[in-house]
Image (cartoon, rainbow, N blue to C red; front, side):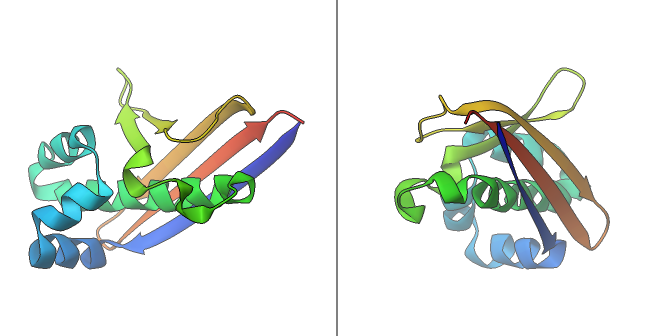
Length: 125
């Protein structure tokens, strides 16, 4: 068994500025429709939620990057965060062979200025 992890921290203002300046083009490049709908439902805190999902995507990429033949083999939208019934974040990764992954876990936190995410993946030997 092999364990990999990835961590990322992002300034919320950076994501907010990208969304305000670039708009839908930025959103459609980075986030799935499910993620956009979730973040937009958060009204006044939507930028924290967008930022947290951005951090998850970066952290997940770091956790899987050693297993990728080509770092361009997945896109931003191939990594998706959804919440379960209790509101816990769940990670899905599309576009790669996941047969070697036993389990994945994600942790997200955010405050007024920053969002941080940690992704842990357990692999078969």
